[in-house]
Length: 156
Ligand SMILES: [Zn+2]
Image (spheres, rainbow, N blue to C red):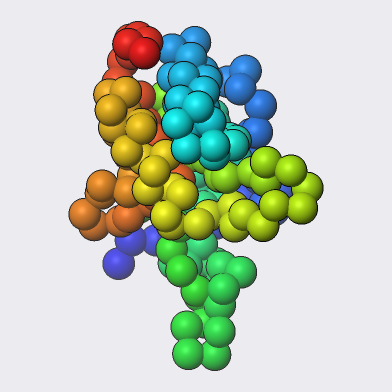
């Protein structure tokens, strides 16, 4: 059995919601995706996480494996896994991935941040732009996730 890495001493490393840790072309791909989703579908797309430290990747990998996730229950004491990528395997760490959610266009508009139908629309725009969309993954579907090929440049 592989020994389990410890939970980071700093507890729960928070996501980096700023864009400064991303490659320039990753930032540009997000802004292009955001503009097209707004123009075509009226969806306000925001970034929940961009660059990710190895410490945070290790923390996320631990959830649902040896650390309880927030959806844990009596029948599933560890809850859901959130990633299959160990530290060093995530393109978030390589500054080439971001996760999105849908924001409310106005304060009174009811929008679920992770509405699958809206995420599917965003995903189709992303694929058209040449991004890899986690909603197309077979083993671990991750609808909010996009990754960007090295040197991606804007086509739209
Ligand atoms: Zn992601």
